[in-house]
Image (cartoon, rainbow, N blue to C red; front, side, top):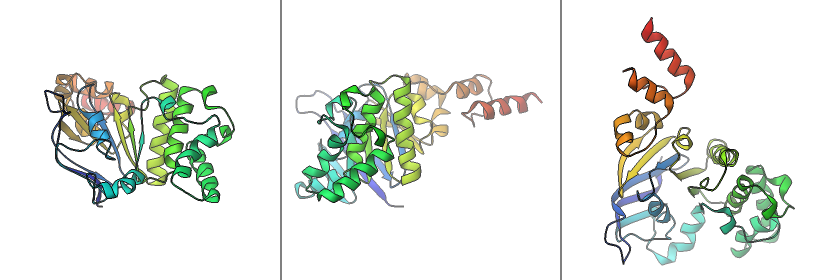
Length: 272
């Protein structure tokens, strides 16, 4: 399948900065996949995120969204319709006093006909499990519910890619679970491309692919199992691995499982 987003030797430095934030990034994101990007603060992952719909443009190199050059101003609207962005703080994305009005805001600004807006709003709220709250005031919702409303507002624009920059950073464990379950379901059931920027190891386990960033470069890229099995690399980067992976590593056993049941089976097999 063709990549929907491509980074080609992308370098980026802020004008006043003393160092490169992105250092020659080459990355392809396949349509319909769930890609998690993991790294500490300062690793460059949020800057990578902002290149996906031309919030930032490369200092050198190219970013392509469905073969549209993000530096082409004539394609800017099409690029931003293709890649929908969700940020850390849902309060910064909620602009209306009623949930359904907030979700309708973006399609209204795009000039979508009223009847279609109604259909899009209802569909988007159902997709994130918030339809029953459509007449509620957003400020009365929990953090996880607010973030799901923010996701619905992006879905109402009908993007091909849902890109999220640490969307659970301000949420409690239940809110985090709600958001990750929602975006996983959108990928698995609706075929939406999901790019999740995070520094939480556990949010990456269900992804198709895990990219690890450090100091503006990609230092690991593979399935979560492949990446987390590189325990020494992850420790060197100050990142966690699943407890099951760590146990297998310390026992010197093959790191071929992340769930407790499979991990137990490997240990039992080694003892027999």
